[in-house]
Length: 192
Image (tube, rainbow, N blue to C red; front, side, top):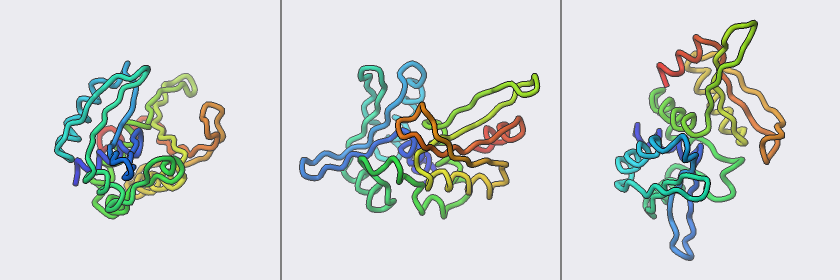
């Protein structure tokens, strides 16, 4: 369950589930940045191998990096058993599956690790002349943002949830889950 939880987090972040039964096309695909994520994709290949029994194919496509795993059984498991969205319905509706939410805190955190590794950011800004670290996860799904907020809040993190309109995002309105300061960021990296 631990590796599955992390892989589900990765799929939530940068994944795509393809399910087209008419032409028998079933796969899970993760896309990323070829300049900075090649090593991470080797890790994802091992994660897929452990969970699905297939390591997938890592390929460079234009400006992107992709890993794709073909498995009708796994795709149907994600959709039918975990209730994950696929295709164009994912963007605003994606959420952490209930079986993961209802599991242990460790399982919740592993799923958050997968989400952060694909959709999260760590940065340091200056505040009153001092370095101030922050962690953010930005999503178009308010459901997902609220779940992440709840998991962190019940885990005793000082967490912030806000909504913003952003010119940099195609869909304008996004939800931002944030942790600020050395103590919170240090705890994130130690725990999650």
